Length: 109
Length: 114
Image (tube, chains in turn brown, cyan):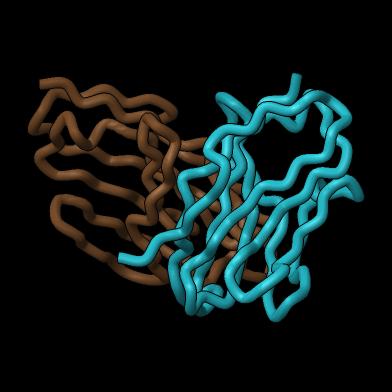
């Protein structure tokens, strides 16, 4: 069974700062997911990646399969980026996900 | 863009009562999931469903829980005899290709057990 650890648990930043959130997992995986949970509770998938790097707008996700580690970066952070960012990996051999505890990001202007 | 819809958004139920949470996954998706999030805690996997049967379930998904896809569009989670500790946000999710595609989440049903 996989275990997921995220750091930091909480993160505060000034608008424009570069943000990095880290995720480590214990068992080899087919793909890792980064998700965003809004203050209202809704969950949105940001990235699914199995190798290398993916970029979407100001968000960049990287993964190192050998080290079982992934990072989510936000460039030029903005108050609207304030949310909980969650890393998730396959629970066992199937398709269900196990989630990290999340990183609560607060960006102030 | 197609989305997963969940009803109701908030359900208040007396302890011991049965509750059914409803979800309409994205229409061409084949994999369906229920997750829950107790207030202040991380999201936890309950059950996955594919090809009209349960494919995985966690230790949380005990005999008081059941899932059903009664028709071609709905996916339901039934809690037979609710307990106080069942109070949580319940999320439904779906995907079209299992591990190779992201999961799409509904907005959740907040279940409050009194």
